[in-house]
Length: 339
Image (cartoon, rainbow, N blue to C red; front, side, top):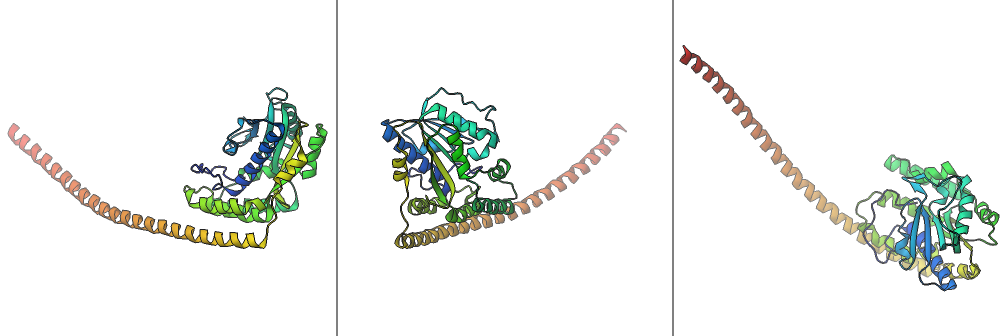
């Protein structure tokens, strides 16, 4: 959901300094692709990503041959009706649609799933939030927060309402209707943490030009807390369907199941976060002090400049008056000389 109009952050080789939900969702996709490729026995999987914007998925899968097919242009769906993807049968090992499926009209989604299964010989992945009472309520909270803080309608959340989220069971039925024998749903974005984190993001990081300020905190969350966020109840699910008999979905689920959280891990992470927030607060305070000093200096310079401008304007006014006096004198002298 995040990073719609936010400038791209500076390079972060660990990737964990990025916004939490982007990191969780793309990391989950990358792990699925790697596991499927391992089972099939290929080193460089051919991956087609269907997306409404650039997701930086290629950063998470540098070993893959990536190709992107745009589903939107500036937020507006451009998938044709009837839905036909311009690719040959079984031309990719993995086909992914993430952060785009729910932004398409419902009548196009079933056909899109069918096309994804047609062109894939390996693994099909569909990532999106699902309709339920908690997700609907939290979407409303986030939408109202963004409207209150920035005075703008956040298009992705507006499209959740415009096009409609579907229940998980209905999305799974779409695969069955297109011939899938089995589909598994992998949860991510544990919803009771997601709501806190997404509000923190929009309060502090959204539209903020200095991403480096937040990377340390993002990194702690992503490295120490995110592994426990792949559980129910979830804001986001990644649905996996095998289109190659070599892909074992049971093994895929086993490999991607997150660890169980313990009181010890929670306490350790809490201490690390408190320390990081302290360092963050100190760094921001230092920057604010430097900014205040710069503003004070500019203000003093501005006052001096205003006084200098006033002085020069006075000189200019006196010069203009002298010029007018001289012109009058010249006219009189000219008249005398002619007489």
